[in-house]
Amino acid sequence: MLHRTVRGTIRYTSKKPEMLDLARGVEHFTFTHHTDGKTTMRAHCCIEEPEPTVMRDIVYSLDERGKPMDCHVRLTVGDQFMGSGWFRFGPDFVECESYGPSIGRLSQRVELNGPIDGMGTHPVVADGYLLSGLGLESTPGEVRVIRVKVPSPDHRGATPPMIAEVNIGAVFIKRETITVAAGTFAARHFQFVDDGTSGMAGAHPPYDVWITDDADGVMLQGGVGGYMQTWYELTALERN
Image (cartoon, rainbow, N blue to C red; front, side, top):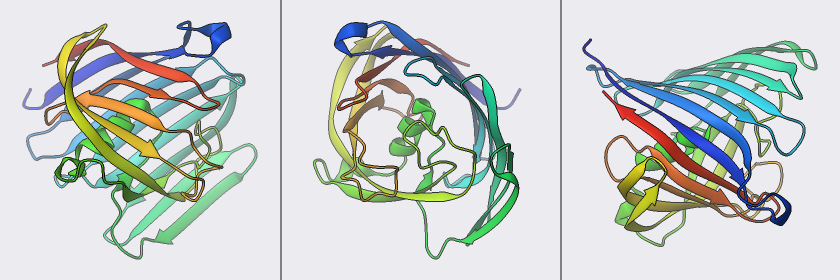
């Protein structure tokens, strides 16, 4: 095969005192990097805590410039079907075909009115990959507002898929070496910051993200403070 594959597993745990370091979910992911420069990410995410549970399936493709091409989202909340949607990006627009019990059949087309930085699809591995291509390392400590389209402005992405926009702060902290269950890696440390004006459903607690210090930009570990108290850790990684 001509393409290159990166796949792995991320464990979700809690930092809440009553659930300290207990499992609260899992994410399995695969990146397919093609010789024409395009990339497809597939992610299967299960959030078991807090209730209601969330199960998400994502297939997301980017072009050779790292810009979004298309994305399919399928969502189950509380073990009940929430919705399924397909997004397609053109030069100056994004369109969505979606269905869910609470929204019925939905067709949308939204003009972009300027460049976007990417699509926020909600798997944590996708958060890391988005940060890896923004060039934030050139201005350490400087918060840059990034513009992304999302299928849900909910903090857990637990609403029927439709077009929304978020303008969230992102900052590069530093390079460091870290050890996770999958091994020891040279890493880049970033943080998302949101004071409540991003377009998300309320202020999001600071969200720290560590990714591999290479072109793959694989999520190594991450954590959200505030009311969430979550932690993410790469437990397995395979690169072919």
